[in-house]
Length: 357
Image (cartoon, rainbow, N blue to C red; front, side):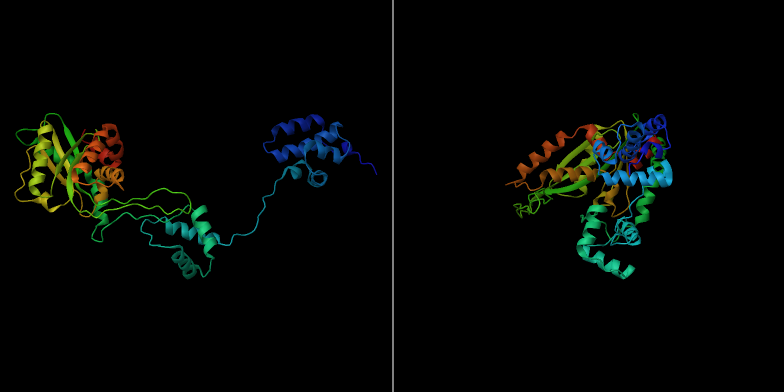
């Protein structure tokens, strides 16, 4: 029996053109185009419509059946396929996400994670399924943890950040009460020392999938110490090389730093090294030392500079200290004030400095 599709479609050709222009998905545009072709008489059969739209005849028949039952709203409704349920329940995924977001998370392997899931959710998950969930969907992977001493006072580190502005105001007030106040304002320095030697510095390397990188190393323990200070606000820096680490070397470092910046109040943030507190240490008149909490090197942005230098030295082999000193000197000269300011200008320091500017 011949079917008159024009009579079965209630919407007019003009209405279908307007509805067609309003569609934003390909599938809904095809559905309205099918009705339009039949209503306008461009196609007289479902087979012809299917050929025009590049779909199967059965698909067009199913669209028309939806239209006859639910009208345009029923035709344009796109149901979301539920699909196969995931092996790992959403509650487990949420728990894992919360656990992995904690920087003190102690998972050392996927086997440990599987055991944790089994103990907490009473679910046994296949290793490969768990690996795909963590590695590909949650983007979790094994990383080298940032070292933190068991003696560190976490609250003291937080308080140091929050009260640095008060410390700076107090330092400036104390300086203003002295007979010779600074003339050119405050210069805030972050100071530290690092040991650089001939022993090979090992770092990660990039290789193709399945290729284990190999690096040659030497165990020569000759070394020297690099004393440094960086100004996070301006990007200025000051470096000195010494053969060892003690109060006398630190005294020389302070004296020469002041020689370069004699007309500033030099506030220096540093750690609690024993030689920083030496009884024989003579602090210059325009220097104020601010000690960060013990065992908290992450509070000092000069650590970023040390990381960069040692990354550049990684896997390099040197016959003597002169060679490595030349390399370090060249790397330091490449540091522009903009680069140093960008990697050391931490928010908590710049915010505090803004209060005494």
